[in-house]
Length: 124
Image (cartoon, rainbow, N blue to C red; front, side):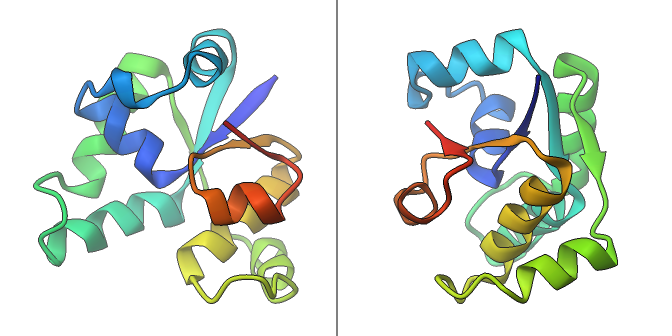
């Protein structure tokens, strides 16, 4: 199975804050192929630019690619079109993350309660 990692999961893995992850989340990470969207890498860069993290998006991705074999997936027109039909959030990053998960037919690993409440493929 393949699991799509949300942005905060990437950051927690990179900063070795595994205690932030549930036992189920750790099991999913350990036992599945991992992907994330290029949009999530961009969100990490944005968070760095506004001072919410000291970590650059590409640095995080490169580390996780080598340590966890994390792969990145692009934002295709299909993802954009799916995101246009997600009306329960105004957050662009969340819309594109959820839409990417839908396009790739994976589960989305997230602790985001708003996503968990509104998206059936979201797991924690």
